[in-house]
Length: 184
Length: 184
DNA sequence: CACAATTCAGTTGTGCACAATCAAAATGCG
DNA sequence: CGCATTTTGATTGTGCACAACTGAATTGTG
Image 1: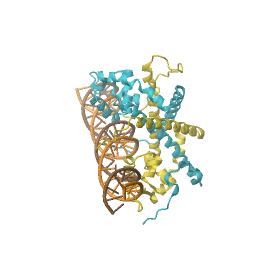
Image 2: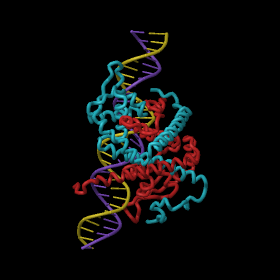
Image 3: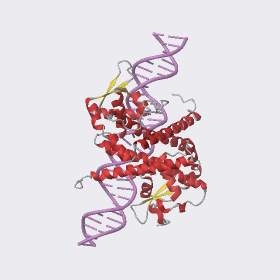
Image 4: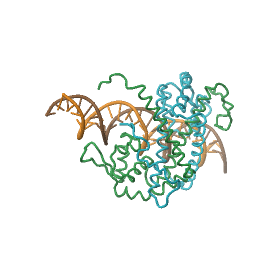
């Protein structure tokens, strides 16, 4: 079934040896790489698992919780605004917002000024959920085992990493643009 | 009717300062929490985007790449072994391995000893891909902008975080065990 | 041997991420 | 004004994560 015990150090060589890259060990690159990307992947999914447990009693998933946080903080927001703040596109947001609407937490409404825009409003139920959600951050913080300062440091580290990674993606994207002559 | 409270700051000015979040420490928790979990989420997806770009020329997705790394390092492995090393369950691995088999990179074969077990073998094509994959780790490392030491530190930090998070999940899991006698 | 429990892979269903595409509305330009 | 372009949201299709379940094979016990 799902993961049980099995330690993260499993097959991983502690590789507590020399700090520098030994020469002529190309295969080690593959192993080392696996450890790094695996660690990131594992942390991400472990975090997701914690949110899954904590948010279960609110009936929210983690991305749904992110959307609600934006709405609690800023009030009515168009879909585009949610996408910008959370870096999610409509392919993700559209069905997600429909599920939130089905749950009675939000209301979707076409803007009168710009008929293309869809405004997302909180319903009274959605507002009320905010009170129950206040306990969430503390429970998450407890689960991480990190103090306030460590959490801030982690956030700064991750933000810097994200910026570097996004830069790379952008660079590669313009390095190989798709031919505009594509006829549909 | 166009009753919508105009929100001049709406277009998303994160630099606008903390002016909005005036009252209540509790609300600060929600905002702060959004920043932390958002940072983790963003880093994870940014990393995924980089892998998507780098692995595109190999025709692999990131989880498929992880599976190939295990096979390159350890050779023929049962599905269960892949699941343990990568913390993935059969619901994820089964279709993934079928796609790798359809791409001609692996072969799935029932073990003769234990008919329940399915051994995953590398095909010659799968072996050959290893050479082209050797460049991947360096490109990823370049994209992160991290040095070797920083990468190791990040890995250690993430591993510690994962362990704490997994502990929490396990604790909560046993705290609320399965419901009443579910007959089947 | 019979029978229950366990192991292992697969399947189903729900939800998210992302690329590609489309339609409608707004906007810009001659 | 007429028409191309841009903006905005929705839709479609592929792939991954995970829970719950099925089913076959193995193992343990009497």
